[in-house]
Image (cartoon, rainbow, N blue to C red):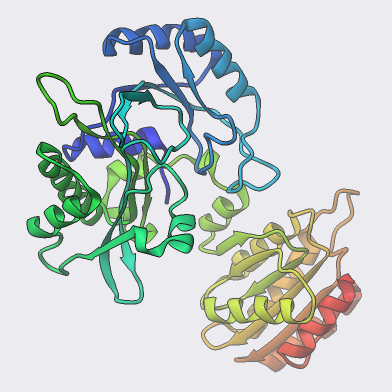
Length: 424
């Protein structure tokens, strides 16, 4: 599960991590008044407007804008709320924007002497911007603090091009991030004076938040330093962007996190699948896959690719799916207009092959096509093995008249070759 940036800021603040004040806007009509409110509260006419979507690359896509008047704020809101955001993380179809964050603008200190520069939403190597995150290192099977001076940019690019710019500090499985570890990382990042304790405190709080809320990722990018003043010559360390992901299997323990879920940011078919206990992830191919077991589903997708096809989805019906769930699985697969063929790959252990066969027949009977007819219009290749396999095959053979596109397969390779050939 993911949440929006404004919700991430709320979480950071609840754990004592300093963030600029902000307000959420959902309509163009709210923009001018919200700008005036945020500007008055911050004492500055600089306000940043950010689209709230579950994808990165907003600044480069033009969906992070600095405004200095109510008119500019309204124009920014109109643009973002009436255009889909397209970035490298969204694909060409882009994402609809329904929420905007209006936040106080922040001055960011230069790394080299010579003044300050206003936050632009696009990282500059001359500014005091850092990357900070806690996640799980699957190689060592430990949680790890990741930090870099290269903040405000894609950390994956930094890790690939300049791996020496990434600092990794493993967390103790029981005691978490220790104070001496946080201070050492702060020194390595180049923090000075009172900045060291500020940064170390933020690292410790982020690590506690990660564990307390069962996160899979807790990220601040960028973490910045404001220009020094007479009262505070070292400046203030602030978090001005946040990204969180949570373990879906643990959200039942966190009612506050569940309340942050935004279904409009999710694929409707994936939400529909969840209601029936199905694991479904939409892809961009044209061969629908219905499989029982996550490992078998991955192998099925691999062999489809091996024989020149392109999977349209990952769909695991699980080991104890009902006939109703199987029927729903087919309905979800065929709701994707890109699907030109379907491959069923079932190994009957707990799942009985005759249940799957009955589900296929039921789906063919109930599924309605755009022209009003019922049944499958696309090639359907079925491979069944395991419990009650002969009963399942007999059910399919008896229903052949209602399933004219059905092609039985003898094994996994045979099924992949047949479905790939059928869709061309």
